Each structure stands twice: as C-alpha cells, then as structure tokens.
Length: 110
Image (cartoon, rainbow, N blue to C red; front, side, top):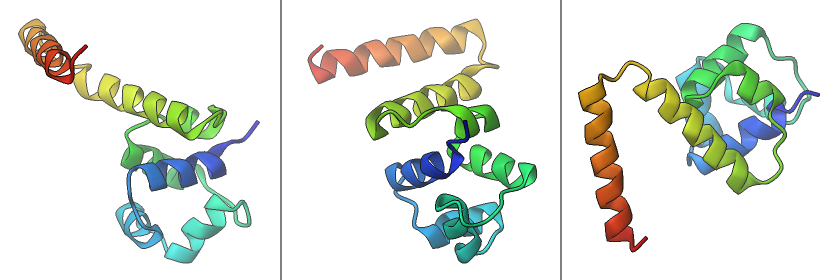
C-alpha cells in the first residue's frame, strides 16, 4: 500500500515546514508538492528520494510506513534519521552520545 501522501503531509507539519519551504528544499513547485500530499499528482522516484532526504528517512519508510498516528510516525521518522546520522560514528563518538542521552534523561526526570 502507498502511504507517501499522508506521510509527506504529516512529516512536513511535524517538522514545521510550510509547503513553500519544503518545495524549495526539494527543488519543486509548491503546487506540485500540494498535489503529492493530496494524491492528485504523480510522484517520481527521484522526487520521493529528495523528500525522504529532506526528512532524513528512507524512501521505503516514506512510501510504505502506515501513518497509524502522527506521533508514532514522527517518532519512527526521527529514529530513522538518527540511525542514518550515527551509522558512521566511532565507538568513542557513540559512547559520548550515550553519555549525553543519559544526562538528558536525568535532567528530564526519568
């Protein structure tokens, strides 16, 4: 099943992008982005890739992940984004990130 339209709209709103801002980032027109979000226009693989890159997720995630809830989708997209960002970290960098997360959780009260 194709979920890209719903996912694009949800992720755009969660990331606080306007249609115009995201369209500019992806090198497309605002009206074409609106068409993609509302499934009134076609979407190419290259455009889907640019949108996925803008959100920091994979094309498969954007295309195939059911938008069960906006919060769940946002959390999953952030996890995908973080996985991509830390995939080339050294052991030392991962350790520092773990310490930072632990400190954040203590300050948060958990």
